[in-house]
Image 1 (cartoon, rainbow, N blue to C red):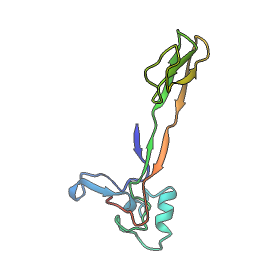
Image 2: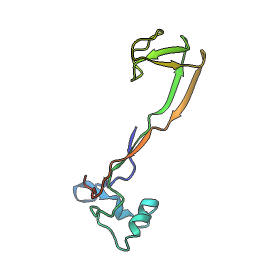
Image 3: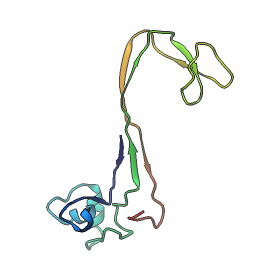
Image 4: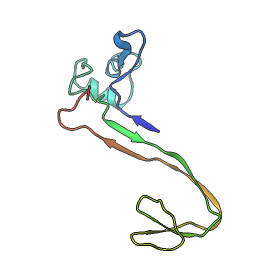
Length: 125
Protein backbone atom coordinates (compact mmCIF):
# COMPACT_ATOMS: atom_id res chain seq x y z
CA UNK A 1 0.00 0.00 0.00
CA UNK A 2 1.07 3.54 -0.68
CA UNK A 3 0.34 6.42 1.67
CA UNK A 4 0.74 10.16 1.64
CA UNK A 5 1.63 11.00 5.24
CA UNK A 6 1.15 14.78 4.98
CA UNK A 7 -1.65 15.21 2.42
CA UNK A 8 -2.69 18.72 1.47
CA UNK A 9 -6.29 17.84 0.60
CA UNK A 10 -9.13 15.38 1.12
CA UNK A 11 -12.46 14.66 -0.55
CA UNK A 12 -15.32 16.74 0.83
CA UNK A 13 -18.50 16.87 -1.29
CA UNK A 14 -19.66 20.01 0.56
CA UNK A 15 -16.67 22.08 -0.61
CA UNK A 16 -15.99 23.78 -3.95
CA UNK A 17 -14.41 21.27 -6.34
CA UNK A 18 -15.03 18.63 -3.61
CA UNK A 19 -11.67 19.52 -2.01
CA UNK A 20 -11.18 20.07 1.69
CA UNK A 21 -7.82 21.29 2.94
CA UNK A 22 -6.16 19.41 5.80
CA UNK A 23 -4.48 22.52 7.20
CA UNK A 24 -7.91 24.12 7.72
CA UNK A 25 -8.77 21.29 10.14
CA UNK A 26 -5.90 22.42 12.38
CA UNK A 27 -8.01 25.39 13.42
CA UNK A 28 -11.13 23.39 14.33
CA UNK A 29 -12.10 20.93 17.05
CA UNK A 30 -10.77 18.16 14.74
CA UNK A 31 -7.22 19.49 15.15
CA UNK A 32 -4.51 17.16 16.30
CA UNK A 33 -1.08 15.80 15.68
CA UNK A 34 2.41 17.13 15.09
CA UNK A 35 1.66 18.64 11.69
CA UNK A 36 -1.18 20.74 13.11
CA UNK A 37 1.12 21.80 15.96
CA UNK A 38 3.65 22.97 13.35
CA UNK A 39 0.97 24.87 11.42
CA UNK A 40 -0.32 26.64 14.54
CA UNK A 41 3.22 27.75 15.45
CA UNK A 42 3.02 30.24 12.57
CA UNK A 43 0.83 32.37 14.87
CA UNK A 44 -1.87 32.77 12.22
CA UNK A 45 -4.08 30.50 10.16
CA UNK A 46 -2.02 29.24 7.24
CA UNK A 47 -3.51 28.98 3.77
CA UNK A 48 -3.37 25.56 2.13
CA UNK A 49 -0.70 26.73 -0.35
CA UNK A 50 1.42 28.67 2.16
CA UNK A 51 5.05 27.43 1.96
CA UNK A 52 5.07 27.21 5.79
CA UNK A 53 2.29 24.63 5.81
CA UNK A 54 3.56 21.14 6.67
CA UNK A 55 0.74 19.64 4.56
CA UNK A 56 2.62 19.50 1.25
CA UNK A 57 1.73 16.01 0.10
CA UNK A 58 5.41 15.23 -0.29
CA UNK A 59 5.96 12.66 2.48
CA UNK A 60 5.22 9.27 0.89
CA UNK A 61 5.28 5.84 2.48
CA UNK A 62 5.20 2.33 1.07
CA UNK A 63 4.05 -0.56 3.28
CA UNK A 64 3.93 -3.91 1.54
CA UNK A 65 2.43 -5.60 4.62
CA UNK A 66 2.90 -9.21 5.65
CA UNK A 67 5.45 -11.23 3.75
CA UNK A 68 5.28 -15.01 3.95
CA UNK A 69 7.85 -17.59 2.91
CA UNK A 70 7.17 -21.31 2.67
CA UNK A 71 10.18 -23.30 1.56
CA UNK A 72 9.88 -26.88 0.41
CA UNK A 73 12.99 -26.81 -1.75
CA UNK A 74 16.67 -26.01 -1.26
CA UNK A 75 17.80 -23.75 1.57
CA UNK A 76 20.24 -21.88 -0.69
CA UNK A 77 19.24 -20.21 -3.96
CA UNK A 78 20.92 -17.78 -6.31
CA UNK A 79 19.02 -14.85 -7.83
CA UNK A 80 19.70 -11.76 -9.89
CA UNK A 81 19.89 -8.38 -8.12
CA UNK A 82 16.09 -8.03 -8.30
CA UNK A 83 15.45 -11.37 -6.58
CA UNK A 84 14.33 -12.97 -9.83
CA UNK A 85 15.60 -15.83 -11.96
CA UNK A 86 16.13 -18.13 -8.97
CA UNK A 87 18.52 -21.01 -9.51
CA UNK A 88 19.95 -23.73 -7.30
CA UNK A 89 23.36 -23.12 -8.90
CA UNK A 90 25.35 -19.88 -9.01
CA UNK A 91 25.52 -17.85 -12.21
CA UNK A 92 27.43 -14.72 -13.25
CA UNK A 93 26.26 -11.75 -11.16
CA UNK A 94 24.07 -13.90 -8.91
CA UNK A 95 23.45 -13.22 -5.24
CA UNK A 96 23.48 -16.15 -2.82
CA UNK A 97 20.37 -16.22 -0.61
CA UNK A 98 19.60 -18.47 2.35
CA UNK A 99 16.29 -19.80 3.65
CA UNK A 100 16.08 -21.44 7.05
CA UNK A 101 14.95 -25.02 6.57
CA UNK A 102 11.70 -26.30 5.20
CA UNK A 103 9.34 -24.36 7.41
CA UNK A 104 7.05 -21.44 6.80
CA UNK A 105 7.59 -18.06 8.32
CA UNK A 106 6.01 -14.65 8.02
CA UNK A 107 6.94 -11.14 8.98
CA UNK A 108 5.47 -7.69 8.63
CA UNK A 109 7.46 -5.51 6.26
CA UNK A 110 7.14 -1.82 7.09
CA UNK A 111 8.56 -0.52 3.85
CA UNK A 112 10.04 2.90 3.38
CA UNK A 113 9.18 6.55 3.91
CA UNK A 114 10.57 9.23 1.65
CA UNK A 115 10.20 12.98 1.79
CA UNK A 116 10.09 14.47 -1.72
CA UNK A 117 10.01 18.06 -0.53
CA UNK A 118 12.69 20.57 -1.34
CA UNK A 119 13.16 24.22 -0.51
CA UNK A 120 10.15 26.13 -1.78
CA UNK A 121 8.00 23.07 -2.50
CA UNK A 122 4.41 23.43 -1.31
CA UNK A 123 0.95 22.31 -2.36
CA UNK A 124 -0.01 21.92 -5.09
CA UNK A 125 3.16 20.17 -6.13
